[in-house]
Length: 182
Image 1 (cartoon, helix red, strand yellow):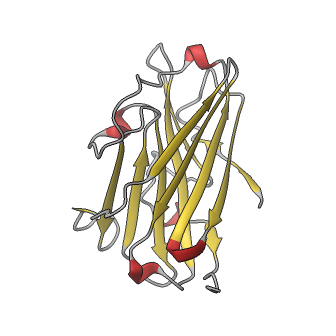
Image 2 (image 1 turned 120 degrees about the vertical axis):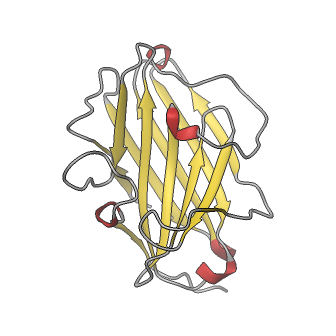
C-alpha cells in the first residue's frame, strides 16, 4: 500500500504542519480504509475534544479529514467527513455541488486516533453503498487543518487553480480499481 503526500493549497499556508501523508485501501465488501498522518506539534493544532461517534454537520469548519468518492465515468459522488472528536458526516451529490443529500449509513464509520507530541493520525473505515461495489473508483482525499491561532490550511492530493475547492473534479486523482471479491 502506497503513501501519498498531501499538498497544502498555496493560498492557505500552514505554520505548524511539517508533513501530511495518507494511505488508502479498498477492502472487501466495498469498505474503504484511510489513514491520515499529520506531522506537526500537536499542541498547536485544533483537534477538538473527544465526543460521541455520531453524525454531525459542519465538521469542515475546523480540523476535518475528508474523502470524496465517485465511480469512474459518473458525475455523482459521495463526501465523507471525519473529525478528530469521532464525529462524522456523509453526503451524496448528483453532480458537482448539486443535489446534496444526507447519505444513509446503516453502519457508522469506524474512527480511531493515534496521537503523540509531534504526530496526529486518524484512521477511518467506512462502507460504500452497494451501487459502488465492483466499480473503478476515483477519490479526492482532502483535509482542513486548523491551528490554535485560527490559521486554516486546506490539503488535498491535488488542487484546482483558484480558491480551495475539494468538490472540483481536478481533486479526484486517486484511482482505486474494482476489487475482485473472493
